Image (tube, rainbow, N blue to C red; front, side, top):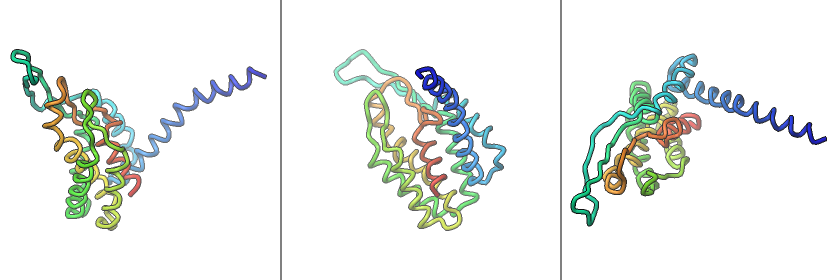
Length: 204
């Protein structure tokens, strides 16, 4: 009587990663298709984002003296993560060739404002923001402004608006509060920039 539930539990635990992988591939395939690429590129794009999440490209370095410390200086390196920042940004810029440029710019501006207000800086952790705020804002704007190009508008506006509003406009404050490496898109596939673009694309 006890053996059967244990076997079912173990079977479910073995099956769960396969189900998650399958659902992830389906989502990425839908997203890639809406972006104007062949569905066969989905696995390559996902692999590029996952592998790229381990790579940070240094942009610049700053040396700051903490308040009250005369001799000690803290080094802060600002970097761009390939998987969570660079690749989504390139895909977003590409959408300017496919979508309504004015709608993308307007959506980017609105998402920037919302992201800037919604983002909270947590010292030692980074920037925290509700994962659905920017995507939903991008989707609503795309529905109202994008017309048939709504997926492209939502994706590009969501990515660029989150980058500018949540990351770039808070960067100076983050530099003062944190030392070490500040990685834009540093969580890779789970970063807010990439998730915002994916959610906005699937919702549009």
